[in-house]
Amino acid sequence: MRRINLISLRILVFLIMFSSIIFSSIILTILDIFPPQKDVRPLGKYYLNYSYFEHGNITRTAKSPEAVTAIVWDYRGLDTLFETTVFFLAVMGGLTLFRVEKADLSKTRIKYIGMTMIVKQATKILAVLIIAVSASIALHGHLTPGGGFQGGTALAIAPLLVLAAYSKYILEEHGLTYLKAILIRSISLSMIWIVVLMPALNGYNLMQNQPFYPGEIFNQLISGSLFFYNLLEYLAIGMGFTAVFLYLSIPEKIYLEELRSIESEKG
Image (tube, rainbow, N blue to C red):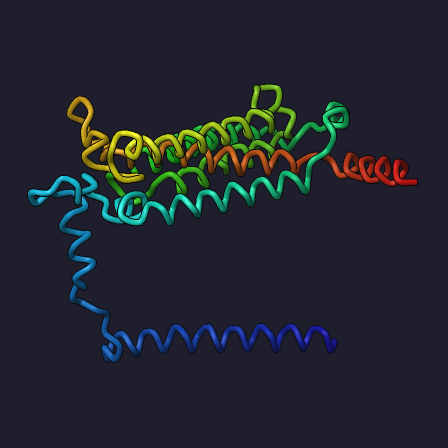
């Protein structure tokens, strides 16, 4: 009884706090006490003016109507490159922690029929839609809000749904193993570095977008290097998460057997 009263008290406190925040926000908005900034700062004006238009200097433009993507992959591209490297190291650390011997992985298959037929059929439809939407988010990142990281995280949801509805073995039977996911991720990251270094090898600045990379191909706007960065980041992020998911879906008994074998070797 006392525990129920304690839970009820916590819920009541939460509701009061939530209501107070909503009510305060409404009051502040109506009274216009803290109005949002309406003037664009000089730095913001620079990015807005040059992200797509040249203004007589092609080296300052990213040829992208999406100013955020232009900033992320061009004007402050080195920061994004380091962030991608940090994600790569994080995935490597996760895979190192959850690694098992190859001989053990061949024994991981257990009888698993998955969820109901309704869930499986819905998963098939959703997986296709997720892949299509994620590709659109990534490949149109230089035109509309989105990009490679957002598209890659969305892409990783598709195999995660399949893992839950079916099992990891369905993905492996169709060729998507953790080794292939790691391979695609590594190739994508290597290609990102090639795109980074190509301007410097041809006499331009490191990671320079215009005028080394073309702004258009066959009259289609690709915004120079932005399209390539988004595409490669899309594959690297999506496959990185997928590799981690495949590792995490290995049955627990395999890890226990691995620990026992290590302890027996030490003994």
